[in-house]
Image 1 (cartoon, rainbow, N blue to C red):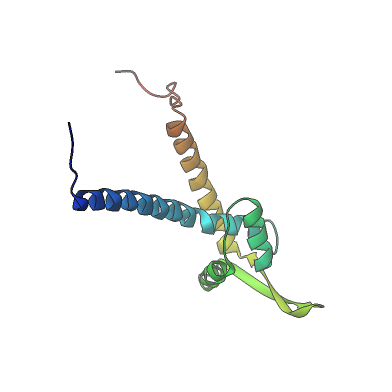
Image 2 (cartoon, rainbow, N blue to C red):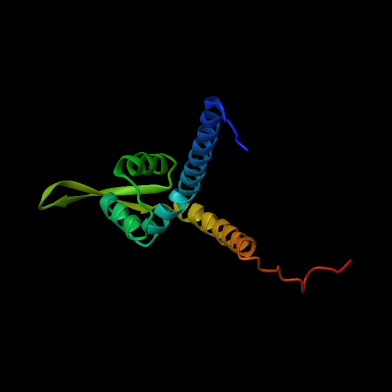
Length: 140
């Protein structure tokens, strides 16, 4: 038995496969973007941070971020009164801008941390098929 597949069918199959790949990449990107702010605030929350140090720390954690992505985010957080900065003279070039959390930023980070704890618990429970604690639930 022989099967003839028109060229446009093959083209549709290839396009369909490409859509799946593009959707996966988009979803992965959206997942990373969703936690980017939280991770940056976490780094800065441990002490003053210089942007290139933030990039390096993110890279060491396999969460690559480009300075072109980081600077607008830092500016947005600063404009929202989550961050403040101070200039520090440098022996090897122009002054450096070191960022730190404001009180508003610390409160915001605390809320994000609570949300992350809840989300990560729920995602881990679902993806690892962990049964929820039934001691507080009622049996029907």
